[in-house]
Image 1 (cartoon, rainbow, N blue to C red):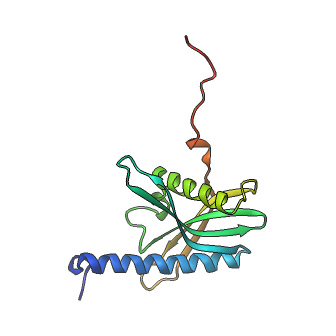
Image 2: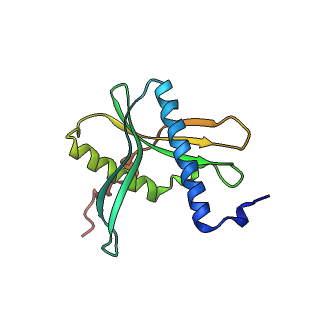
Image 3: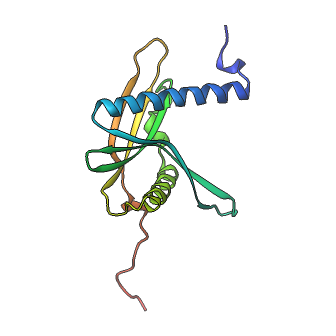
Length: 155
């Protein structure tokens, strides 16, 4: 009988990738069943450079329309929630990266004026159980990432 401790690093990466792909497929079907129109999956684009001047590529799992709202959807899939909910992995760094990627997407397709939001779909695939899928509409917005502007001059 095999356990996670017996898996090699490449086997574990492969299992994680397969779990993620299954979660993204289920999330897309789930969104479509709720009236979303899927526009793109796994949209990747260069979004700049990091502090070490290395190129950074951003990725958005799903891009969809919910009526007249463009939705940038992050999908997080887990095999259990023993350690944390899937949404816990959508931290500030990940949110910032998705915002930058969404900005590039909107510029490429010249849809700067269209309403948009950032959603998260969490998928839990426990062995032997039905998938648990949850949609978190407007999980975050850009306001907390905007640069602060001083209103008063202290000097």
